[in-house]
Length: 319
Ligand SMILES: [Zn+2]
Ligand SMILES: [Zn+2]
Image 1 (tube, rainbow, N blue to C red):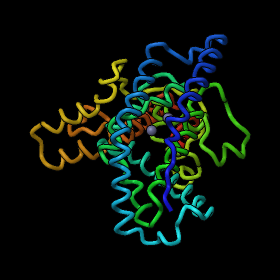
Image 2 (image 1 turned 30 degrees about the vertical axis):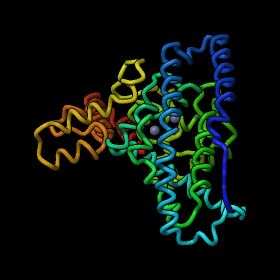
Image 3 (image 1 turned 45 degrees about the vertical axis):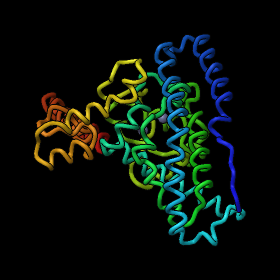
């Protein structure tokens, strides 16, 4: 069966813009400070750049999926698009792939260099959702989905499901929705869960990597509910509205470290290790930041001889 699916993201652009305008009006009327003009235009520029680069990069991804599908595609005889249950299975399989893509994008600098773009705003609004990478697809982030054509899911079905996931993730980038009814918060990725993901507070770092279903974070131990109001952005913010600097700043940083005359294991750690890794301790990873906070809290509380509080605080940090 030949599949031809319209580009869902392109079709959704008018709705994106409309909702964005509504949110901006609500923010202005309520004096909420959800938006900042330059930041919003930078986010929009990143979104446009993403659409443009994807005109080419989506072809690369589809070609990779096709190659694998054609030469392996073990169960393709059973996984045709005409069976409804195949779409259900693919929904879960795609969402699981997204979770691991996203988690590793936060855990390995090579992938972080593309993903950091999405986290580079200090604001959290529907425009932030459009602040997307220019380099992800061409630097191979699609490898996290390659097991799907390998099993025999049709490449067009996979990219369609990826688009549905991206569309879903648009509306959760807002401060206008606080918490949703508990059953929804329990199963789905929501504005509340995703606000945590965009926070630079140490407690919130590298949590809630979900695409559509938050269940993966609960299953794999990366879930963190929203408690204190998040501080949005990066641990070290880049403070620029220049779209090209936003798109390439981490690649440039990676190149600078790559060029240094260092032992091979350091070189490997700079490229593929966690973001913030450094051989001399000049920068810090999420783990190191957490350890610092933990030891500092213990030290401070011990000084105050406030043991009851110390236990509670350490418990909260470990959780
Ligand atoms: Zn992320
Ligand atoms: Zn996001």
